[in-house]
Amino acid sequence: MNFSSLLSSQYFAPLFWTQFLGAFNDNLYKNALIILVTINAASYTSLSIELLIPLSGGIFILPFFLFSALAGQLADKFEKSKLIRMIKIGEINIMLLAALGFYFENIWFLLSVLFFMGCQSSLFGPVKYSILPQHLSENGLLKGNAIIEMGTFLAILLGTLVGGILIMDKDFGRIYVSALVISVAVLGWISSRKIPSAPSADEQLIIKFNIVSQTWNILVAAFKSRLILGAIIAISWFWFIGATMLSLLPLPEFTQNILHAKEQVITLLLALFSIGIGIGSIIAGKSVTLSKSIKWIIIGAIGISLIAFDLYWVSDQLALINHNASASELVSWKVMFFQPLTAHVLIDVLLLGAAGGLYIVPLYVILQEHSAIETRSRTIAANNITNALFMVFSAIATMLLLDNGVSLHTLFALIAITNIAVFTFLFWRFSAAVRKIMLN
Picture 1 (cartoon, helix red, strand yellow):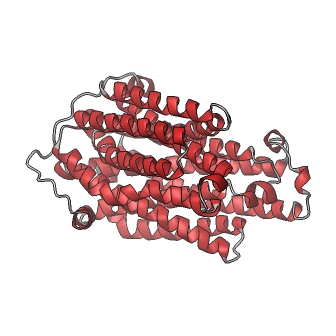
Picture 2: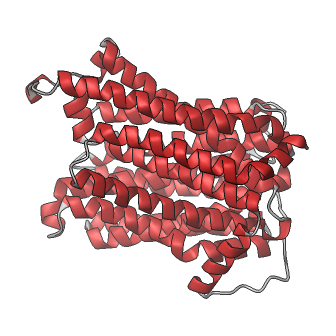
Picture 3: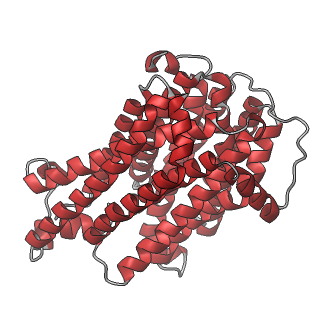
């Protein structure tokens, strides 16, 4: 099975487009909301922008801690395609609320909608990944995960761009955004109706609603397997690095002080990183079997450190050159392609994304193929909880280091060194479990 046949198959294409449209909608709404708040903060609330933007991120990610355990139980107990359709109906209703919030320009109502969007995404996560092994072979699973990762990052990029562009229209921006998020949610529901049936993994499962105890139980159960524990930590580390990089690249200290470029370069950097993820994912997905794809995890991990260190070096050179440059002389993003050092940065960002794509795809397949069928969704829920935790750690660590005077480009070097240390530990601790896969 090749990528084109997979994208046109009745077993995968509807799920892909359902996921793509959902990720697009999430990021369209989030970015439109952030820009709306940034422009009108003074009239909306007494809170500062510096507090509102991280607050928005925290509100979206909170449901992954609160409801992933419930989401895993639901996905294991019920038929998955019907569950996805119900989640998508929920998304339509949430987007109707979003339109109401934009109409009244009520920031607290809009932030509440953002929380509900996080709830919907947290419910969709386990079923999205646990349904794939029920419809695809091992080879198809590698390709399917590759396309899902590529599509997710491209949807994030497109949603971010479209949301930002539409909301900037002072007269009709809120109307455009409202109409589009509702329309995309409806399209996602239509796509979900074509997802083939995926039988329950455990019909006898009794749903338990205690958030704390069930979250703990799901994590303990998933971590009993050394292989699954290693895969979850490795995947979560990817999201730690990804969240760190995506928080550093748009900062003025990087775009203006180091690259000496206008703010439009942010879009270019995010585009290159997303395209890189797509390229790396597709390369990893071309592997015939999971055992043959393990090499990409190693190559990707080493690549992340080498490229991050190279990004530190070239950023340090640019920081010295542009130290006394005037802010009025900021260059456009187009000029960056023709200056050796800034072009070097663009290549690094693209390659960093590609290394991440190589690294992440086989890990998701390990998680899917080697988790017990009857608890697969709960295992993926445990992964989602751990991912969210690592991303919170990323935000806290980045904020503390920058606040304590660590330069932004020095953080690139710290990422390179820490990544090697973490991956060396993972390779040492879980190499025996990985060798079993390679010998199969």
